[in-house]
Amino acid sequence: MRFDTKAELTDQDVQSGLKNVVRDGITSQTMLTLTSGVFLIAYALEMGASNLAIGIIAAIPPLSQLFQIPSIYLVEKYRARKKITFFSAVTSRFFLLLIALIPFFVSMRNGLIMLTTMLLLHTSINAVVVCSWNSWMRDLVPQDRLGTFFSTRLKYSLIPAMLLSLSAGLFIDAWENYTGLEVVFCYSVLFVLGFFAGMIGTAIIYRIPEPKMVRPEQRIPFLELLTNPFKDRNYKKLIMFLGSWNFAVNLAAPFFTVYLLRRLNYGMGVVMGLTVLSQFTYFTFVRVWGRIADRFSNKSVLVVSGNLFMICILLWTFTTLPEKYFLTMPLLIVIHVFMGVSIAGIALSSGNIGLKLAPKGEATSYLAAHNLINSMAAGFAPIIGGTFADFFTKREFSWAISWSTPRDAFMFETLNFRGLDFFFFFAFLIGLYSLHRLSIVQETGDVKEKVVIDEFFSMTSNKLRNLSTAGGLRYMHQFPERFSRSKRRRKKGNTNK
Image (cartoon, rainbow, N blue to C red; front, side, top):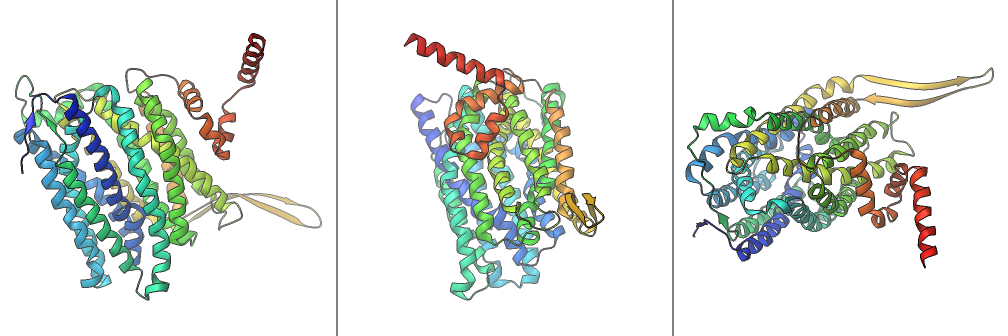
C-alpha cells in the first residue's frame, strides 16, 4: 500500500479526489445512521440504560474528541494525513463489530458496560481520523467551493440514510413478531451492516489523493501550536460561540429519542418516520444553504438557521400539556420539518466557518482547538442532563388559564414543564445566548438576517410551495410593501408585452 503525497495536485487529481470524498460521505453516513443517534440510544435502552447512562453514552463521542490534542502532534510530526486517516479508520470501525456481538456473548447487565467501553474506544480512535481528515480536506477542497461542495456531499450522503432509517425503523418494529427473538438482537444486525459500510469507506479513503502539507516558515513548538488559536482574537470568539452552542444543543438533542419512546410511547417506526422527515427537509435545503454561504458568509447562515433551530427546541415543550393531545403529532411533524431545514444550515456552516477562518498551513491546530472546545461542551451537557433528569421528573411547572361562571368552570393548560421539558427550555435560553456570541465573530461577506432570509425564500420558492408549513413561513416574512412592489412589476411586464 502506498500513501504518497504530491507537492501540486493536477485538476484531474482534484476532481477525482472530490468524487471519492463524496463517495466516502455516502458510506460514512450509512455507518453513522446504523450505529449512532436514534439506534444507539434505543440499543442502550433495550439493555436497561437509565437517564444518566444515556447521558454518558451521548457524552462519549464528543468527549473522545479530546484525543485530537495528541493527534495534532501525530499529524504535524509525520505529515502523512492519508496514512493516519486510513489506519485509524480501520481500527476504530472494528469496535463497531464488537458492539454488535454484545447480546450474543454478554449478559444485559454487563452489556451496557461493554457497550460504553467499546464506544469509547471506537470514538477515541476516530478522533484521530477527524483531526487528520479535516486538515487534509482544508488543502484538497478549493476554498471558493467549500460551501457548495460539502453541501453536495451531505446531500448525496442523505439519500441512503433516509431509506435506511425508515427501513430499519420498520424492521425493528416487525422483528419480534416475525423472529420471536428479543429486539436487542435486531440492533446487532444494524451494527454489523454499519461496520461493513465503514470498511467500504476506508477503501474509498485510500483512493483520495493527498496534497503535501504546507510547512510553516519556522517550526512552531507543540505547546505554542496548541495555544495559537486562542491568541487569534476572532477565532477565539468563534470558539466561544461554538462551545456555548454545542452545550445548548446537546443538553436537549440526546434526549429527543428518549422523549419519543418513553414519554410519548411511540414505536420505532414512528420515531424513524419523523427522523426521515427531518432528513428529507435537510436533503432539500442543504444545497440552498451552501449557495447562500458561498455568496454571503457562513456566519449569516448560522444566525438564521440557529434561531430557527432554537425555536424548534422550545416547541418540544408544547408536545405534551401535560400528556399527549390532539396537536402532539402535528406539532412533532412541524418541529421535524423545520429542524431539518435549520440543521442543514448549521451543520454546513459551523464546519465551514472553522475551515475558512483557519490560516493556511495551521489548519490542524486551529481545527483541533475548535473541536476541543466543542467536544467538552457537547460532552458535559448530556451528562449534566442525565444527572438531573430524575430530579426534574419529580418536578412540574404549569401555567393554566381558567374561567368560571356560577354554573361551570373551564381551565385550559397553556404551559406545562415536566422532566425533559425543563432541559428543552434551558437549552433554548442558552442557545439564544450563544447566538449573541456569534454576533461578534467577523467573517468576510457577513450580511443582515433579512438579506439571508430574502435570499433563502427567493432560491426555494418552488420548494416552499410544495411544503405547506414552510410556505406559510414564507409569507410571514413578506410585508404588504413587497406584495405591492411585485404587483407593480407584473403590471409593467404586461404593458411591455
